[in-house]
Length: 69
Image (cartoon, rainbow, N blue to C red):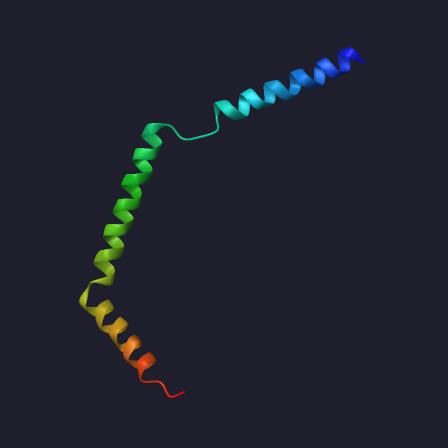
């Protein structure tokens, strides 16, 4: 019984070490994630502030505000 408990404990500890070793991102991955998020935000800002999209958003808001209840 002692060997079985020891084997189970060893398996749990080895699994915990493996999970801990590959648990998160490294600094370079964080940096690449931030760069990608900023690039996406810039593209989204440019699209939303473009003339055609801006006019469409304004028309949607005007229709919503002018709706009869």
